Image (cartoon, rainbow, N blue to C red; front, top):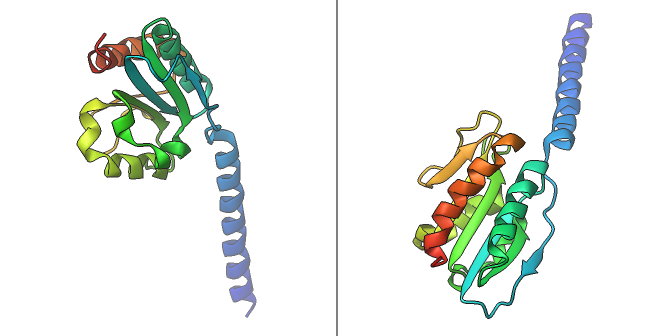
Length: 169
């Protein structure tokens, strides 16, 4: 009986350490909620939806994209990826989705949006970040990389090159 108690105690200790690690990991690396805002009038010639998560890297990309287009005739709506559930892609000329790979998969809001809007992938630009920098959803043409702030101008340039034709600029 004593051997069974020792095995049970070891097992429970390992489970507790694992649980503590999972909570710490989620706290340390979870994405923040992105602030929702709009730039320019919805009556502008072109309409861009930018769905993102909150992090230093993603905020830098978002700010650079918004700064680039705010002087153009482009309406920009920035939302958190959790709000993708209510998005009708018909309302936009281009959609930019910036998300991180979490727990070995894309966030469920992004995955369900991409599955729901397969017919609109030609006007959707995706940037997926991950620790390794190469993960992306199967069947989705996406930019991939690590969240390295020094690489922001490179990603912004690539994204703008994809968005300009969609926004007719």
